Length: 289
Ligand code: UTP
Image (cartoon, rainbow, N blue to C red; front, side, top):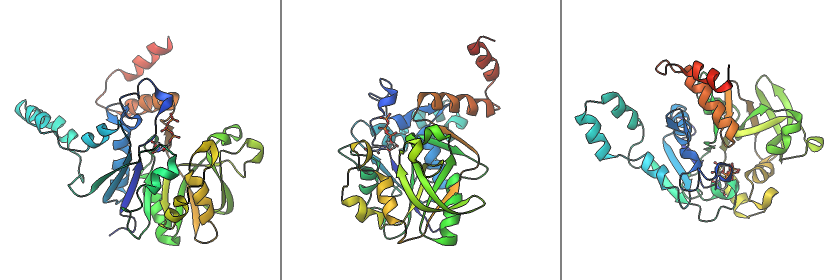
């Protein structure tokens, strides 16, 4: 049995950068090729050994619940039409009753608040947090790299990439200690620092293994950058008392919380697909080549 069995998926944000698309459709249901963002994140967690899936939702997000539920009408029609490939696609392995839970965040007070809403469902052990709008891909599920570090060293682990100096203001940034290959000891964390104040260019990208002690800190409700309860602020307070490490993500990463990132992910993943014909020429036509 793996050491990290529960994952939390915060999907309670307003997704304002994609309005009007996200007025009635959750950002996490936006597709990359033919699969919604949230399914990529859930599959990553499942393939890394996670067995319990906790979604932090909000009003207007019921499409996420429906997506992971059975749809008997659709299944019946597909079966009658003999479309067994499609039928397999709409049934996701591992999504069995009792392994999925949904909690309403009620007020969009920030990512830290969203994670805190899962406090009664994570048990006493470490848990994962995955942000579905960060689409990470690699030779193995990127979350598995974090779980490996947790199993070696214990404590908290985050995934990072190196960003351009001028971009630090868009991320939580790590103050690094000892660096050993892809592993970085985390000595501090700063949310969205100006480039001049950034302690490094290692930016946290939406994958976390957290010890349950974070919940007590989040419960204090400190308001941070942007007037929100920031996960970064609570994580920063765990440093020193518990091991805290980062893993440099190897592989591709798409910021699907931004329009350009979502477009890039769609093109990149479509180009990888053998069953899609003509993607490259469609891209060329769009470029006017
Ligand atoms: P973002 O900062 O991308 O915010 O949240 P957002 O509301 O989703 O999108 P924009 O910026 O308005 O376009 C990062 C992650 O944290 C979740 C979001 O759903 C997303 O997965 N989140 C954010 C919550 O679950 N609740 C919140 O109150 C805020």
